Length: 464
Image (cartoon, rainbow, N blue to C red):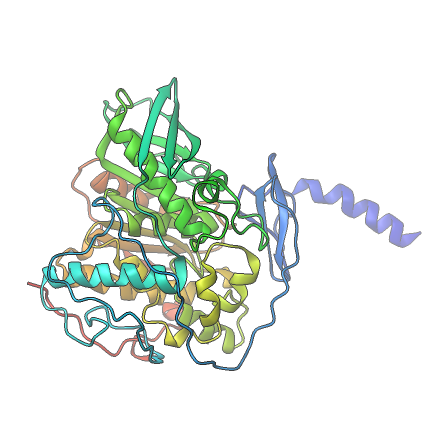
């Protein structure tokens, strides 16, 4: 009887806690916050340490992942990379080409941004454009999957606040829509912020918010979602692209239609992209892939986003429960199947995510991060993004890339302490104002244990 009374008491006590927001944490070992989600979201098990409020169409699954401790000989994927359109990073005349069957060498440090795959040095800004193209190809080949070029036909229409994107290629056609919420202040044409699944921070004044249902383009329910969504209707369920690449393709199609559709009232020179958690991973990839994006804002994207595969492995090995490459491939289909041979030997990858971030340079990147959720890998993100900033330093625009890391709040529940930092980047890069964006900061003690000399064995050149 006493157990029954205790249970009844618990039932009546639980509703007094605030509900977790969409994409916020709602459970896990040692979790003491809310365990229910706002309307339209379901508390979805990710692993023993982390459950997350996901859109209600998601299902609860228990991934089965058995990490391997054995290092195997690198496998070179047979998938080739398709050269994309001019709006995407494209090969520059005279750039070195990658070997058709490159030999990968283990490197426990964060790879040098200023060395080509061949070992040649990057000494000029023109060299950097070539290095960026090389990294673009390597990331597609070994981790993200092939980004298709612009389809044969892309058209669209605007009805009220709904923008419809129509795409045809090789006899197949799809359509998807985004909604545009125009600001109550400012003057058209407005800066436009493409938000994966909606915003997880207050809508900036004077900025139109373009809500992108990325799940419609590529599903992310669980590890069984591979090949599902409109991208795969067009290109086939066996396409090498993981969901992150498919979503980036979708963002590019949105921008294509914004460029050709009258009366959208969007300033095409002031387009941003954002998302939180898994959608933050997507936002980072979109900003890396499409050079028409002026400002990229991944929020609490964790491993697979702003975090480093190498550093996350080290954090886990030190006894802190954090997400790693070997775990993430069992959770969902964000990455290409090409990535799977490397998840237990990430040191052989010729890149890490400081170099994914580097594809954004010299355009603006602002990383919003969390310092007190171990699963998100705050030390990994801090070290990775602090290292990424060195590319902007070399290009002479260090204040075009920043990171703000703050803790003690629910996942994706944007804290007011980061508002001024966000405003500085939005006001400068989407509104054209003069603000101070020299923002590289964490509230974590002792840089969360990150020691740069453990990870960086190269120096930053001044590129001419």
